[in-house]
Length: 234
Length: 287
Image 1 (tube, each protein chain N blue to C red):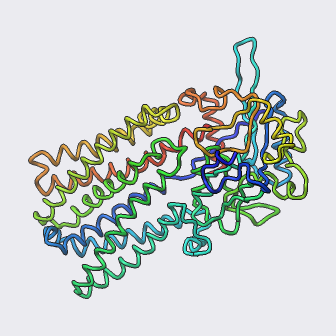
Image 2: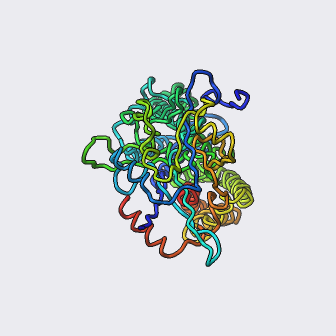
Image 3: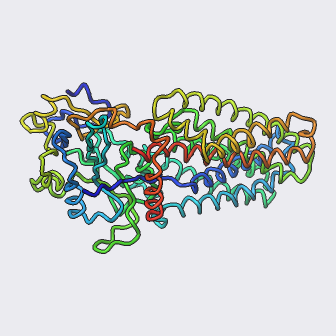
């Protein structure tokens, strides 16, 4: 598969290198938000910001309607634009594993990585935190690097009640993620950006994963919620 | 089950637009001051010294704005750390460009104060090249983000150079102290650079309107509502088309007309920078 590699930073099919990925089977997601809670507990993620979140859309036509959940997180892209955008190398890719991580002590808070991320996966940590002095820098999902390097799976995967999230090494042909991506149709978010994400979805419909025209005319209730959100995060 | 709606903030606030505005003016004023040393720029001699001083003052203000907008202001020194520098980022090049321009500006002003024409000319030429890099890098800052409609176009660095010349000429017209020869030259700069901005805006709007779903939505946000008032009303109509029209009339050849057009161009320059910066971020906040 090396012919598919375009930039030198990519690790697709590299012998001896791990390439961790997550497959999210949307047919199994029940929107319980346990993954969000597990992530919050694992990293003491502050209020109002998320390393992983589960937005939904109501789809179908009355009376046959349902909520479609789309768990989101950093896509740990094979060719991450945030790594290119950071002027001080505070965000970097771990070659063996493909984790995209942060040097918190280097981050100057210019927010270029946030601007470059097509997935809104990055956020600014607040000025004050209770249990850690990592404040006022950009943060994001780490694919639970500290757990994976000890042979565990990420906290969100561990806790998922429906086993909708599956984690493993894509470069290992025997892994479950390899099996799923090789045998089932999978989708990635915003493939047109060329980031080569490492989060694959089963059952995602692009009508639901793309930005729809109705955002131009958002519901009033959303405006009210957004105003409260902006007030709390200004 | 309680549903919680997650929103996303715009990473870059309006403060960046003010920075783009002041650094663009600083760069253009330095260029005009340097140009006055050459035979083709003799008309600009009256603004040589004031333009250099105002350019330097705006450079200091711009630097403070940029540092103040960092969430870790004291870590701006990391930009100068060779061990940290990531040269794939336009911000890294911009930081180096800004610092080099600052150093050369100090040398230029020193030579100017000491009536050292030879060195002033030398530092002026070096500084002008670095000054050109400032609007170019600010444009690249936006261009490189492939997921941002209206930003992700090769036009952006060129547009920022033209905006820099327009806004710089407008401020220079205020510094010309009524000297007709300088005002006539600055009027010509305003007209040509303003015309270039107009042409580029038409191209930008056209490609954004037809550029796919997110681009189309960005176009809709930028041409309607409060952002539409700023972009179309203040930026295009009042701040670009109107001053060009004024400058083409007999009134636009008089001192008052040129200064009035300059004032409008400044309003337009700020409005365009702000709306392009914010407009490129709106749609993404809904993803």
